[in-house]
Every structure is written in C-alpha cells, then in structure tokens.
Image (cartoon, rainbow, N blue to C red; front, side, top):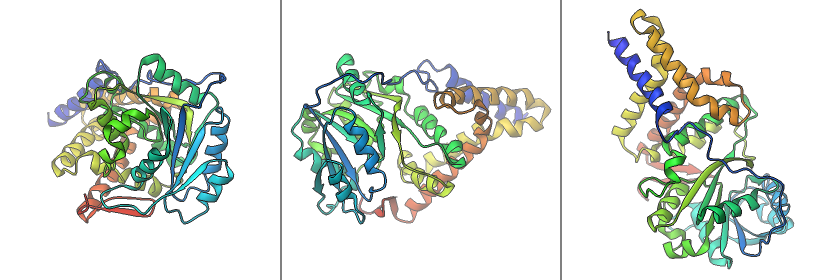
Length: 367
C-alpha cells in the first residue's frame, strides 16, 4: 500500500511536469542563427571577463571577428597565465582588472570595470569560453528589436564529448529549465526571472539605472540575479536555447562537473537545510520510485507510468542536442548524481565556504 502511494506521488511529479501549461520540458524557446547579414555593430561592445582563460579565449575572439568585428573589451581578472597577451593578440582592448574589493564576486567586479569603459547602447556579456557561430550576434540583436526586449540571454550548447558530459550536461540544462521555466521567465511576471550568464545582451542604460553591477555585487548566481533586477525595473527579458552559442569549457570528469554544480547548488536552495531536505525527498520520490516500485506488484504499473513520464519529459532536450533518447533511461542515476552534488555544495557551505571558482573562495562570513 505504501509503495503504491509513493509510486503514485512519483507519477504525479512527472506527469505534472509534462502537463504543466508553461511546458518546462519544451525546447520551443530558441534562438536560431541563419545566414549572417551585414550588420552595423558600432552600437555594441562585447565585455569578456577573463581569469586564466588563455586556452579558450582565442576561439572566442576569432568567432567574434566573424560576426562583423565588434568592439571587444577583455577584462583580465588577475590572471596567472597569458590571458592578457592572448586577448591583445586577438585584437581586443585589454583592461587590467583591479584587485577584488570586499563584497564583490570576481566576475561581477570584472564586468563592472568593463561597463564603466564601454560607451555604446548595447553590451554583450560573454564568458571567455563561449564561441558564437556565424549570425549569432545578428540574431541576438534582431530578437531584442523584434520583441522589444532590453535583456536577451541564451543558454549555450555545453560540451558533450566525454562520457560524463554526455550523461550529465543535457540534464544540467533540463533541470535549469524545470527550476526556471522559460515561458514564465519570458512573461511580464516579475516574480520569476532567469538568464544564462554565458551570453547576455543588455542595454547599457538599463545597467546604469540599476547602479551597475554593484546592485548584485555579491551574487553567486549572478545571471538570474541580474535578470531579476532588470525585471524589477519594469524592463523585459528573454531567455532561450541556441545551437549557435557554444561553450568550449571542458568537464572531462565527474569531479569537474561536481565542482561546477556545487558552486551554486546550495545557493539555489537559499542555504536552507529545510529546502535541502525537501529537495532530497522530491528527487528520491521522482528518481528512485520508478525503480523501487517495480519490485512490488501493487505499485508496478504506477512505477512504469512514472518512468514513462520521466523519460518523455527529458527526451525533447536530448533530441535538441542530438543525443540518443536512450539516455533518458539513465535519469534515476542522473538525478542521484545531481543530488549528491547538491549535498556537496551544502557541506562546503556548512564548513564556511559559500562558493569556490577559478581559485577563489567566497566565504560564508563575507556574504
């Protein structure tokens, strides 16, 4: 009886996701880049915060030059490698980042320095590992103009080459869309906002009105915090998927993916032990009951229905990125691994480290 009830809850979770009117599993919010038209980029500045990015930065800069040669500012954030030299060789304006002030995260401080230097209407906030395919920049500007948006962001296509990347990276995007349904984030509702920080097009005057990046200076999930701040002022935001925005960041091992997820997972739960417990319970019911329920006759068909709903909700993401639908059968394992990474993030926070990235630690006390 108990097994049937738990399996029934699992069915309700997955079929609730499938039937929700905002369709969080869908890939309909997308930005496609066609043949690149000749466009005037004099009104746009690209800001690239870079800390030890000498390996990936050349690809980013070459790809930008193919968009129409926009003005590019690379903010060298106290790098220990040849980031500054690589940026200069690639034709970018290089700013030597000042020491990180108290109360700021590194990326936001770098972006603030670049914002103060830029003089154009539009700013493209671009991570150093993001490679724009031909026509992507034109598509971003066209999207902003056609929809009357002051803030447009795109979830990059993550690298999916190693076994761990193929297993976990499509699911990273899938879970993000469940947490921040794009249809709701793109609506006029101010209570939900989302962005993908790797590629954000924003009007400079909007940032000025906010007081620059200082308005969110200590944010760990800085992209969504910025989207919320923009929406709170009554401006319109949009987020979508695109195959024309590609991340070259490598995550060859489970540990490297775990570090990436643990950086923000507990922050996402507002550092709440109660929300962590609720998240654990929800994932246990959603991901484990479709397996456990198969072993009890009273819950077997409910378990099958839950597994069908689970796979059906994940398959559109897999297909969008050209992955086999069979990866959906691994969702119980995928959910378990992401839960473990969330607990890793919580454990790190309880030990005094709020976040860790690029050889920097942000302490719990500083927050």
